[in-house]
Image (cartoon, rainbow, N blue to C red; front, side, top):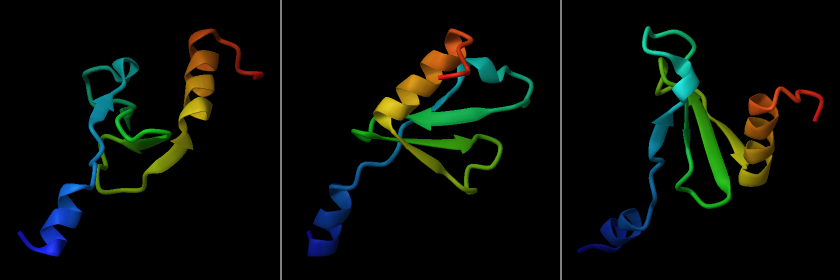
Length: 74
């Protein structure tokens, strides 16, 4: 195994999860990954090679909490 292969083996790729609120008819689809420690990447599932927004995990949790409690003033 080469040095480059060992380095690649240590890279953790995002395990994408489609939001349960995205529906099944290719509507507004959001995917996120929670397997990267303190970083939460978010992308449009209809454009998987497009841009990815990244959030600190505490900010992502605050955002999701605000959405689920309808407290959008937080």
